[in-house]
Image (tube, rainbow over the protein chains, first blue to last red):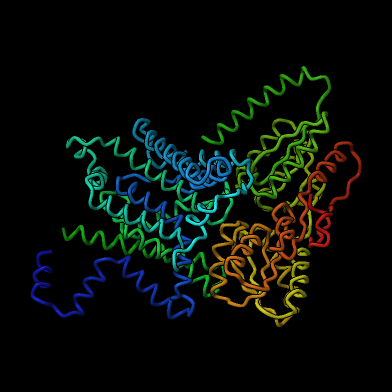
Length: 330
Length: 306
């Protein structure tokens, strides 16, 4: 580290500095390569219309990915995001005619918080490994969504204000839901990087025994993290509802896996202890833009899956290598 | 854990029902229905029709089991049905090949099988009857309608169902074979997994990549309605959208003008149950019953939509 600092101070050529910068974060480099090659491949790619399209399509997975960033940093994992999304969407659609936009959003967020809190409780009080506890929640929440909706897609008359902010509205050229989710990303970034709570979350993932000896309430913090994930996943359900206008109990299948991929591509290790919300966004865009460019190029839908799988594996491989290298240097 | 629990509860239920069966006046006819899943709108309305049918027949007791989109789960649940000694099993396999061994098991236990919707890849002697509709014919009907509607030229976007499912393969095959007769029409395919949300996402991309497309063919109505949503939001004019199923979504879509047509795919209920009753009464039934699949448009909406 010292060596490279000295070099920089001495004024190395601009090319070397850019190289250093690009290597420092593989996810960003990968995203840049993806954007440039996509722009070359399709004339429709780099248009305002298309980019905001992609942003809006990935708002739901994005919210789950933000929650997962905290969960994974704290040393856990959560598989219930997609199912909580579906439960949120179905509950939202069912209560919409009775309680007005604010009541509806509040109800859904409470449902999500409850699911998330139960996840945390199972893990901290029940001593169940996070993978199993949240797998259980994934099944239960999906079952609840199917029960509440009676297996049907619930069509609902949504309040116009809700539809505007969570679905079809535009502020200038920016879709309103994209603005809302961007705000969530900014707040989450600040919470993780610049608050004591954020540092505690990193600490319990890095060294939970140490955190405990330091006097931190590790179990309480763990429950907080899972509750946050539940709230964000349920709010993703609100965006589903706003976008499609219906509460679909099968919504959000496998979203948790895309979310996990986004977090890991963004360089957060499965072992926890460190990570970054902006880089999760970069990971999310690596996945989202891959889907988009394959669709824009009308690649055969069957081979699209192959391309996506390969890109995700390579992206994760490079970010993990980079991580290992940085650890060695330390 | 999960299957163990299911088995426990099922066997418990079986014990209880055998206890109560003694008290029952007459022996009830038990029919087991196995659906590959019970959350898809098509499956839901099938189950509802079956229950309505059974509600009018006090001598029949109906058990509906969910295959949870998993061939192994469905296999286990049908084995349980055989163990419980139901009189007849009415089933639609999650996967034609994977569920094939169940035919032997049913034969050994002397439980007749009525297959509906999706075929079972076994020798026809192993089941009593099959009720279905020809997916390739439906694809062809959609192609004929769309080709005429767009005047034989332009780009048509095909929203495919779950890859590998027999319905997807046949709906695609029948459609593409018919469109091949119109050299002016180009097909672009996307996968929407039979879901509204997936269809909306790919249609947003498709409508950017293929400006000026003239038609959309969805392998089901959910996806066709997803396409209609994007077409409406983007203010695209003169796009003919055709779906398949003719359930509630399709009826609403055609009625509102969002869709030009939907090919009606029958839920096979209560027809499959009527055939099952005939099988139980040892009456002769046709081995294969192909239901008609009419094209729903504004003209004949009242006839098929209730």
